Amino acid sequence: MKKLVLVGGGHAHLFVLKYLLEHHLEGVQITLITPDYFQIYSGMLPGWIAGHYALENIQIDLRPWVKAAHATLMLDTMVGVNADSRSIRLVSGRVIQYDLLSLDTGSETNISGLEFIGKRLLPVKPLSNFIGTWPRLLDEIQKKPDYALVIVGGGAASVEIAFSVHFAMQKVNTHAKICLVFSETGLLASHPIKVRQQITERMQRLGIQLISHRVTGVENGVLLSNGHTVVADVVIAATGAQPPDWLSTSGLILSNDGFIAVDAFQRSVSHANVFATGDVCSRQDVSVTRSGVHAVHAGPFLAKNLCAVLSDHVLQSYQPHRSPLYLISCGDQYAVASWGKFSYRGYWVWRWKNYIDRGFVRKFSRSLQ
Ligand SMILES: Cc1cc2nc3c(=O)[nH]c(=O)nc-3n(C[C@H](O)[C@H](O)[C@H](O)COP(=O)(O)OP(=O)(O)OC[C@H]3O[C@@H](n4cnc5c(N)ncnc54)[C@H](O)[C@@H]3O)c2cc1C
Image (tube, rainbow, N blue to C red):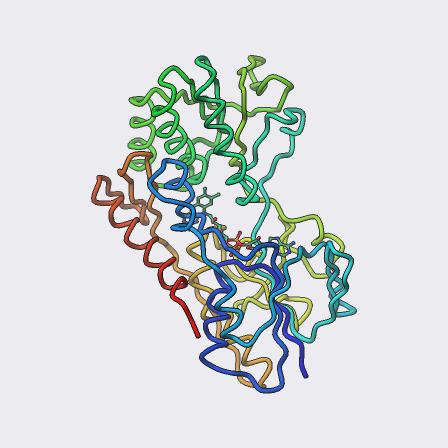
Protein backbone atom coordinates (compact mmCIF):
# COMPACT_ATOMS: atom_id res chain seq x y z
CA MET A 1 0.00 0.00 0.00
CA LYS A 2 1.22 3.49 -0.83
CA LYS A 3 0.63 6.06 1.88
CA LEU A 4 -0.96 9.38 0.94
CA VAL A 5 -1.02 11.74 3.93
CA LEU A 6 -3.06 14.94 3.81
CA VAL A 7 -2.27 17.43 6.59
CA GLY A 8 -4.80 20.17 7.35
CA GLY A 9 -8.49 20.23 6.50
CA GLY A 10 -8.11 23.43 4.47
CA HIS A 11 -10.01 24.51 1.37
CA ALA A 12 -7.93 22.58 -1.17
CA HIS A 13 -8.13 19.32 0.76
CA LEU A 14 -11.92 19.46 0.64
CA PHE A 15 -11.59 19.18 -3.14
CA VAL A 16 -9.07 16.36 -2.76
CA LEU A 17 -11.50 14.36 -0.59
CA LYS A 18 -14.30 15.04 -3.08
CA TYR A 19 -12.12 13.88 -5.97
CA LEU A 20 -11.01 10.78 -4.09
CA LEU A 21 -14.57 9.69 -3.47
CA GLU A 22 -15.32 10.07 -7.18
CA HIS A 23 -12.05 8.39 -8.29
CA HIS A 24 -11.30 5.52 -5.99
CA LEU A 25 -7.56 4.72 -5.85
CA GLU A 26 -6.64 1.06 -5.48
CA GLY A 27 -3.67 0.23 -3.26
CA VAL A 28 -3.47 3.63 -1.59
CA GLN A 29 -3.94 4.25 2.13
CA ILE A 30 -5.24 7.80 2.65
CA THR A 31 -5.01 9.66 5.96
CA LEU A 32 -6.21 13.17 6.81
CA ILE A 33 -4.56 14.74 9.85
CA THR A 34 -6.20 17.87 11.22
CA PRO A 35 -6.98 19.08 14.77
CA ASP A 36 -10.76 19.31 14.44
CA TYR A 37 -13.74 17.52 12.89
CA PHE A 38 -14.86 20.86 11.47
CA GLN A 39 -13.28 23.24 8.99
CA ILE A 40 -14.29 26.87 9.57
CA TYR A 41 -14.99 28.83 6.38
CA SER A 42 -13.07 32.05 7.12
CA GLY A 43 -14.94 34.14 4.53
CA MET A 44 -18.05 33.84 6.72
CA LEU A 45 -16.33 34.51 10.06
CA PRO A 46 -17.10 38.27 9.93
CA GLY A 47 -20.77 37.41 9.29
CA TRP A 48 -20.71 35.10 12.33
CA ILE A 49 -19.19 37.88 14.49
CA ALA A 50 -21.90 40.26 13.27
CA GLY A 51 -24.56 37.70 14.17
CA HIS A 52 -25.76 37.01 10.61
CA TYR A 53 -24.74 33.34 10.80
CA ALA A 54 -24.85 30.59 13.39
CA LEU A 55 -21.69 28.56 13.89
CA GLU A 56 -23.16 25.59 12.01
CA ASN A 57 -23.68 27.86 8.96
CA ILE A 58 -19.94 28.58 8.63
CA GLN A 59 -18.32 25.21 9.26
CA ILE A 60 -17.92 22.03 7.26
CA ASP A 61 -17.98 18.61 8.86
CA LEU A 62 -15.00 16.71 7.48
CA ARG A 63 -16.14 13.28 8.70
CA PRO A 64 -18.58 12.35 5.90
CA TRP A 65 -16.00 13.34 3.27
CA VAL A 66 -13.22 11.35 4.90
CA LYS A 67 -15.49 8.32 5.15
CA ALA A 68 -16.73 8.57 1.57
CA ALA A 69 -13.16 8.96 0.30
CA HIS A 70 -12.22 5.71 2.11
CA ALA A 71 -9.70 7.70 4.16
CA THR A 72 -8.83 7.70 7.86
CA LEU A 73 -9.27 10.82 9.95
CA MET A 74 -6.65 11.46 12.61
CA LEU A 75 -7.44 14.32 14.98
CA ASP A 76 -3.96 15.62 15.68
CA THR A 77 -1.64 18.52 14.92
CA MET A 78 1.55 18.20 12.94
CA VAL A 79 4.56 19.73 14.69
CA GLY A 80 7.38 18.58 12.44
CA VAL A 81 8.21 17.41 8.92
CA ASN A 82 11.33 15.57 7.89
CA ALA A 83 11.08 15.70 4.13
CA ASP A 84 14.29 13.73 3.63
CA SER A 85 13.12 10.77 5.74
CA ARG A 86 9.50 11.11 4.48
CA SER A 87 8.00 11.42 7.93
CA ILE A 88 5.95 13.84 9.97
CA ARG A 89 5.72 14.25 13.72
CA LEU A 90 2.45 14.95 15.53
CA VAL A 91 1.80 16.77 18.80
CA SER A 92 0.56 13.46 20.26
CA GLY A 93 4.09 12.10 19.81
CA ARG A 94 3.23 9.84 16.88
CA VAL A 95 5.50 9.72 13.85
CA ILE A 96 3.82 9.01 10.52
CA GLN A 97 5.64 7.83 7.39
CA TYR A 98 4.37 8.82 3.97
CA ASP A 99 5.00 8.13 0.31
CA LEU A 100 3.14 11.24 -0.80
CA LEU A 101 2.46 14.25 1.44
CA SER A 102 0.04 17.12 0.83
CA LEU A 103 0.06 20.16 3.11
CA ASP A 104 -2.92 22.52 3.35
CA THR A 105 -2.42 23.86 6.86
CA GLY A 106 -2.90 27.58 6.24
CA SER A 107 -0.82 30.29 7.89
CA GLU A 108 -0.54 31.82 11.35
CA THR A 109 -1.28 35.39 12.42
CA ASN A 110 1.92 37.40 12.64
CA ILE A 111 2.00 38.71 16.21
CA SER A 112 5.67 39.72 16.30
CA GLY A 113 5.99 42.93 18.32
CA LEU A 114 2.57 42.44 19.90
CA GLU A 115 3.48 39.69 22.41
CA PHE A 116 3.80 42.12 25.35
CA ILE A 117 0.07 42.67 25.28
CA GLY A 118 -0.21 39.27 26.95
CA LYS A 119 -3.71 38.08 27.83
CA ARG A 120 -5.37 41.03 26.13
CA LEU A 121 -4.09 39.93 22.73
CA LEU A 122 -6.44 37.91 20.54
CA PRO A 123 -4.99 36.76 17.18
CA VAL A 124 -7.59 35.94 14.52
CA LYS A 125 -5.88 32.60 13.85
CA PRO A 126 -6.31 29.85 14.83
CA LEU A 127 -9.95 30.58 13.95
CA SER A 128 -11.16 27.95 16.45
CA ASN A 129 -9.49 29.88 19.27
CA PHE A 130 -11.02 33.16 18.08
CA ILE A 131 -14.46 31.56 17.87
CA GLY A 132 -14.07 30.12 21.37
CA THR A 133 -13.13 33.52 22.80
CA TRP A 134 -15.42 35.99 21.02
CA PRO A 135 -18.71 35.24 22.91
CA ARG A 136 -16.94 35.84 26.25
CA LEU A 137 -15.49 39.07 24.90
CA LEU A 138 -18.90 40.29 23.81
CA ASP A 139 -20.14 39.60 27.30
CA GLU A 140 -17.33 41.75 28.74
CA ILE A 141 -18.08 44.52 26.21
CA GLN A 142 -21.69 44.56 27.38
CA LYS A 143 -20.67 44.87 31.04
CA LYS A 144 -18.07 47.64 30.70
CA PRO A 145 -19.50 50.93 29.35
CA ASP A 146 -16.14 52.46 28.31
CA TYR A 147 -14.79 49.27 26.69
CA ALA A 148 -12.01 49.98 24.18
CA LEU A 149 -11.10 47.53 21.44
CA VAL A 150 -8.17 47.86 19.05
CA ILE A 151 -7.73 45.91 15.82
CA VAL A 152 -4.27 45.75 14.24
CA GLY A 153 -3.94 45.07 10.52
CA GLY A 154 -4.50 46.75 7.18
CA GLY A 155 -5.77 43.98 4.92
CA ALA A 156 -9.26 42.85 3.95
CA ALA A 157 -9.55 40.50 6.95
CA SER A 158 -8.85 43.30 9.46
CA VAL A 159 -11.33 45.59 7.71
CA GLU A 160 -14.07 42.96 7.77
CA ILE A 161 -13.32 42.15 11.41
CA ALA A 162 -13.47 45.86 12.33
CA PHE A 163 -16.86 46.32 10.64
CA SER A 164 -18.35 43.16 12.08
CA VAL A 165 -17.02 43.74 15.59
CA HIS A 166 -18.41 47.28 15.45
CA PHE A 167 -21.80 45.97 14.32
CA ALA A 168 -21.92 43.38 17.12
CA MET A 169 -20.69 45.87 19.74
CA GLN A 170 -23.34 48.43 18.85
CA LYS A 171 -26.06 45.95 19.75
CA VAL A 172 -24.75 45.50 23.32
CA ASN A 173 -22.89 48.73 24.14
CA THR A 174 -23.21 51.92 22.11
CA HIS A 175 -20.44 53.65 24.11
CA ALA A 176 -17.73 51.06 23.40
CA LYS A 177 -14.87 52.42 21.30
CA ILE A 178 -13.18 50.72 18.40
CA CYS A 179 -9.97 51.63 16.64
CA LEU A 180 -8.27 50.11 13.59
CA VAL A 181 -4.49 50.57 13.46
CA PHE A 182 -2.53 49.83 10.29
CA SER A 183 0.98 50.56 9.07
CA GLU A 184 2.07 53.45 6.83
CA THR A 185 1.48 51.35 3.70
CA GLY A 186 -2.17 52.16 4.28
CA LEU A 187 -5.49 50.40 4.48
CA LEU A 188 -6.22 47.81 1.74
CA ALA A 189 -3.02 48.82 -0.05
CA SER A 190 -3.43 46.19 -2.78
CA HIS A 191 -7.00 47.27 -3.64
CA PRO A 192 -8.14 50.05 -6.02
CA ILE A 193 -8.26 53.61 -4.71
CA LYS A 194 -12.07 53.70 -5.00
CA VAL A 195 -12.42 50.68 -2.71
CA ARG A 196 -10.06 52.24 -0.19
CA GLN A 197 -12.00 55.52 -0.24
CA GLN A 198 -15.37 53.82 0.15
CA ILE A 199 -14.19 51.68 3.04
CA THR A 200 -12.46 54.60 4.78
CA GLU A 201 -15.52 56.85 4.45
CA ARG A 202 -17.81 54.15 5.78
CA MET A 203 -15.58 53.51 8.77
CA GLN A 204 -15.36 57.20 9.60
CA ARG A 205 -19.13 57.54 9.32
CA LEU A 206 -19.59 54.67 11.79
CA GLY A 207 -17.12 56.20 14.26
CA ILE A 208 -14.40 53.56 13.83
CA GLN A 209 -11.18 55.41 14.59
CA LEU A 210 -8.46 54.91 11.95
CA ILE A 211 -4.79 55.27 12.86
CA SER A 212 -1.93 54.86 10.41
CA HIS A 213 1.18 54.07 12.45
CA ARG A 214 3.42 51.10 13.13
CA VAL A 215 2.61 49.62 16.54
CA THR A 216 4.20 47.54 19.23
CA GLY A 217 2.29 45.85 21.97
CA VAL A 218 2.42 47.16 25.54
CA GLU A 219 0.73 45.87 28.68
CA ASN A 220 -2.26 48.22 28.44
CA GLY A 221 -2.70 48.40 24.66
CA VAL A 222 -0.54 49.44 21.71
CA LEU A 223 2.29 51.95 21.42
CA LEU A 224 2.24 53.93 18.17
CA SER A 225 5.40 54.88 16.28
CA ASN A 226 4.73 58.55 17.21
CA GLY A 227 5.07 57.67 20.92
CA HIS A 228 1.37 57.75 21.80
CA THR A 229 -0.33 54.81 23.48
CA VAL A 230 -3.80 53.60 22.56
CA VAL A 231 -5.22 51.95 25.65
CA ALA A 232 -7.26 48.83 24.97
CA ASP A 233 -9.19 46.20 26.88
CA VAL A 234 -8.45 43.82 24.04
CA VAL A 235 -6.29 43.93 20.92
CA ILE A 236 -7.36 41.77 17.99
CA ALA A 237 -4.42 40.93 15.70
CA ALA A 238 -5.52 40.54 12.08
CA THR A 239 -2.04 41.21 10.77
CA GLY A 240 -0.42 39.42 7.85
CA ALA A 241 0.32 35.73 7.51
CA GLN A 242 3.41 34.13 8.97
CA PRO A 243 4.71 30.60 8.28
CA PRO A 244 4.42 27.97 11.00
CA ASP A 245 7.61 27.24 12.99
CA TRP A 246 7.86 23.60 11.88
CA LEU A 247 8.67 24.66 8.32
CA SER A 248 12.15 25.97 9.21
CA THR A 249 13.40 22.48 10.13
CA SER A 250 11.47 20.55 7.47
CA GLY A 251 14.30 20.29 4.95
CA LEU A 252 11.94 21.68 2.29
CA ILE A 253 13.16 24.61 0.22
CA LEU A 254 11.34 27.69 1.43
CA SER A 255 10.54 30.98 -0.31
CA ASN A 256 12.13 34.25 0.83
CA ASP A 257 9.18 34.85 3.13
CA GLY A 258 9.55 31.42 4.75
CA PHE A 259 6.69 29.48 3.14
CA ILE A 260 7.00 26.23 1.14
CA ALA A 261 8.38 27.04 -2.31
CA VAL A 262 6.14 25.30 -4.88
CA ASP A 263 5.98 25.14 -8.68
CA ALA A 264 3.01 25.43 -11.05
CA PHE A 265 1.82 21.93 -10.00
CA GLN A 266 1.73 23.01 -6.32
CA ARG A 267 4.67 20.65 -5.78
CA SER A 268 7.65 21.41 -3.56
CA VAL A 269 10.58 22.58 -5.66
CA SER A 270 12.90 20.42 -3.55
CA HIS A 271 10.87 17.25 -2.81
CA ALA A 272 8.77 15.78 -5.62
CA ASN A 273 6.64 13.77 -3.18
CA VAL A 274 5.49 16.84 -1.21
CA PHE A 275 2.67 19.12 -2.39
CA ALA A 276 1.46 22.29 -0.69
CA THR A 277 -1.52 24.53 -1.38
CA GLY A 278 -3.11 27.65 0.09
CA ASP A 279 -1.52 29.99 2.62
CA VAL A 280 1.28 27.58 3.62
CA CYS A 281 3.07 27.85 0.26
CA SER A 282 4.52 30.41 -2.12
CA ARG A 283 4.43 29.87 -5.85
CA GLN A 284 7.88 30.45 -7.40
CA ASP A 285 6.70 31.05 -10.98
CA VAL A 286 4.00 33.64 -10.29
CA SER A 287 3.00 36.01 -7.51
CA VAL A 288 -0.12 34.80 -5.67
CA THR A 289 -1.72 36.59 -2.72
CA ARG A 290 -2.56 34.54 0.36
CA SER A 291 -6.33 34.22 0.16
CA GLY A 292 -8.98 31.57 0.36
CA VAL A 293 -9.91 32.24 -3.28
CA HIS A 294 -6.59 30.79 -4.45
CA ALA A 295 -6.72 27.85 -2.03
CA VAL A 296 -10.18 27.03 -3.42
CA HIS A 297 -9.23 27.41 -7.09
CA ALA A 298 -6.06 25.32 -6.70
CA GLY A 299 -7.97 22.50 -4.96
CA PRO A 300 -9.20 20.58 -8.04
CA PHE A 301 -5.70 20.76 -9.60
CA LEU A 302 -4.09 19.51 -6.42
CA ALA A 303 -6.55 16.60 -6.32
CA LYS A 304 -5.77 15.57 -9.90
CA ASN A 305 -2.02 15.95 -9.38
CA LEU A 306 -1.92 13.82 -6.24
CA CYS A 307 -3.76 11.06 -8.11
CA ALA A 308 -1.52 11.57 -11.15
CA VAL A 309 1.61 11.02 -9.05
CA LEU A 310 0.14 7.84 -7.57
CA SER A 311 -0.83 6.47 -10.98
CA ASP A 312 2.14 7.75 -13.03
CA HIS A 313 0.08 10.21 -15.06
CA VAL A 314 0.98 13.68 -16.27
CA LEU A 315 0.57 16.60 -13.82
CA GLN A 316 -1.57 19.65 -14.58
CA SER A 317 -0.38 23.17 -13.84
CA TYR A 318 -2.65 25.59 -12.00
CA GLN A 319 -2.70 29.15 -13.34
CA PRO A 320 -4.04 31.50 -10.65
CA HIS A 321 -6.51 34.22 -11.67
CA ARG A 322 -4.65 37.50 -12.00
CA SER A 323 -7.51 39.53 -10.54
CA PRO A 324 -9.64 37.45 -8.21
CA LEU A 325 -12.87 38.93 -6.91
CA TYR A 326 -12.87 40.10 -3.29
CA LEU A 327 -16.14 40.82 -1.55
CA ILE A 328 -15.53 42.82 1.61
CA SER A 329 -18.39 42.73 4.10
CA CYS A 330 -19.08 45.88 6.10
CA GLY A 331 -20.81 44.73 9.28
CA ASP A 332 -24.44 45.25 8.41
CA GLN A 333 -25.55 43.38 5.32
CA TYR A 334 -23.62 45.72 3.04
CA ALA A 335 -20.42 44.91 1.14
CA VAL A 336 -17.86 46.36 -1.25
CA ALA A 337 -16.62 44.37 -4.23
CA SER A 338 -13.02 44.78 -5.33
CA TRP A 339 -12.13 43.26 -8.67
CA GLY A 340 -9.04 44.37 -10.59
CA LYS A 341 -9.46 48.13 -10.90
CA PHE A 342 -13.25 47.96 -10.51
CA SER A 343 -15.35 48.40 -7.43
CA TYR A 344 -19.04 47.96 -6.65
CA ARG A 345 -20.89 48.40 -3.39
CA GLY A 346 -24.27 48.00 -1.84
CA TYR A 347 -26.60 45.65 0.00
CA TRP A 348 -26.85 43.63 -3.20
CA VAL A 349 -23.07 42.98 -3.03
CA TRP A 350 -23.53 41.47 0.44
CA ARG A 351 -26.37 39.27 -0.87
CA TRP A 352 -24.05 38.20 -3.70
CA LYS A 353 -21.30 37.32 -1.18
CA ASN A 354 -23.80 35.54 1.01
CA TYR A 355 -24.96 33.48 -1.99
CA ILE A 356 -21.38 32.47 -2.92
CA ASP A 357 -20.31 31.72 0.67
CA ARG A 358 -23.41 29.76 1.59
CA GLY A 359 -23.10 27.90 -1.71
CA PHE A 360 -19.53 26.82 -0.87
CA VAL A 361 -20.45 25.55 2.58
CA ARG A 362 -23.59 23.85 1.21
CA LYS A 363 -21.53 22.13 -1.48
CA PHE A 364 -19.46 20.46 1.22
CA SER A 365 -22.24 19.99 3.75
CA ARG A 366 -24.52 17.52 2.04
CA SER A 367 -24.70 14.17 3.69
CA LEU A 368 -22.80 11.38 1.97
CA GLN A 369 -23.17 7.64 2.14
C1 LIG B 1 -11.52 36.98 9.05
C2 LIG B 1 -10.97 36.47 7.76
C3 LIG B 1 -11.73 36.61 6.62
C4 LIG B 1 -11.24 36.17 5.40
N1 LIG B 1 -12.01 36.33 4.29
C5 LIG B 1 -11.56 35.91 3.11
C6 LIG B 1 -12.38 36.06 1.95
O1 LIG B 1 -13.52 36.56 2.01
N2 LIG B 1 -11.86 35.64 0.77
C7 LIG B 1 -10.61 35.08 0.69
O2 LIG B 1 -10.20 34.70 -0.41
N3 LIG B 1 -9.82 34.92 1.77
C8 LIG B 1 -10.27 35.32 2.98
N4 LIG B 1 -9.48 35.17 4.08
C9 LIG B 1 -8.16 34.52 3.95
C10 LIG B 1 -8.36 33.03 4.09
O3 LIG B 1 -8.84 32.71 5.36
C11 LIG B 1 -7.09 32.22 3.93
O4 LIG B 1 -6.34 32.68 2.85
C12 LIG B 1 -7.49 30.77 3.70
O5 LIG B 1 -8.18 30.27 4.82
C13 LIG B 1 -6.30 29.89 3.41
O6 LIG B 1 -6.79 28.61 3.18
P1 LIG B 1 -5.93 27.34 3.47
O7 LIG B 1 -6.66 26.21 2.84
O8 LIG B 1 -4.53 27.59 3.08
O9 LIG B 1 -5.90 27.16 5.05
P2 LIG B 1 -7.04 27.22 6.22
O10 LIG B 1 -8.33 27.56 5.63
O11 LIG B 1 -6.43 28.09 7.22
O12 LIG B 1 -7.07 25.72 6.67
C14 LIG B 1 -5.98 25.13 7.33
C15 LIG B 1 -6.43 23.86 8.01
O13 LIG B 1 -5.29 23.17 8.50
C16 LIG B 1 -5.43 22.87 9.88
N5 LIG B 1 -4.09 22.94 10.46
C17 LIG B 1 -3.36 24.05 10.69
N6 LIG B 1 -2.15 23.72 11.19
C18 LIG B 1 -2.12 22.37 11.27
C19 LIG B 1 -1.14 21.44 11.70
N7 LIG B 1 0.03 21.85 12.16
N8 LIG B 1 -1.44 20.12 11.66
C20 LIG B 1 -2.64 19.70 11.18
N9 LIG B 1 -3.61 20.54 10.74
C21 LIG B 1 -3.35 21.86 10.79
C22 LIG B 1 -6.37 23.92 10.41
O14 LIG B 1 -7.02 23.48 11.56
C23 LIG B 1 -7.32 24.06 9.22
O15 LIG B 1 -8.28 23.03 9.24
C24 LIG B 1 -9.95 35.59 5.32
C25 LIG B 1 -9.19 35.45 6.48
C26 LIG B 1 -9.69 35.87 7.69
C27 LIG B 1 -8.84 35.71 8.93
